[in-house]
Length: 257
Image 1 (cartoon, rainbow, N blue to C red):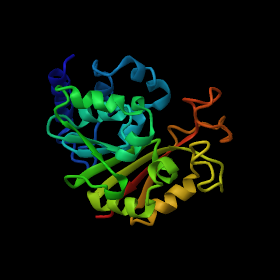
Image 2: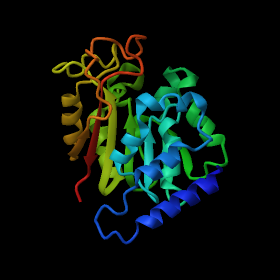
Image 3: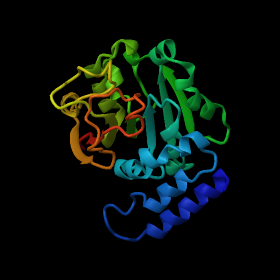
Image 4: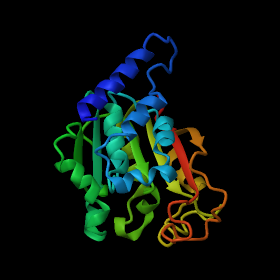
């Protein structure tokens, strides 16, 4: 299935939903999201991660839909950039944002996937943005800002650390009223605050929630789709004993109307 066919099929599914008459009738169905996940352009190494990363659950929870403008902040290997590109379709747009601080201090492999998308002419609705987190900006008001498994990094030395309070307020201002800030991250021990961000690459969800709400966001919902009760939060996320199976929190924050 090529990209035009994929978008055409998702458009047909969306049209079938029209006339339902409910406030959520424009939200994507699981069929639409799974069609995006089935895109044959996705690299095999990313497809293999689907069983544990559960992209359908995360995207549905985010309420991303056709026509949306989305920023995938610290998009890394482009795992979600590719999927979101298909979900928003030709009338939407995805901005894949890579901080210059990440380029300067991390392996090129961390961002190679996003750079490959930028070179692929079939991803006409994706734009690669590169800039410093100290001057974070986006070209247009957005419907959704997505940050997966990287919020904790904002507190780490390789990113500055970033001025998190300022960045969260900039993200708030970059969204349309009613826009969503979707955050996925690895859970640290309760009460640990920022203690483990640099060493275990985890963050206490309570600390993360308080920081984001301080920018004006409202925590609208939390999903347990990525939770894992067998993770005791004591191992680094790259440990072979837990990698790919960490306990993760999934928050949907909304900028009030």
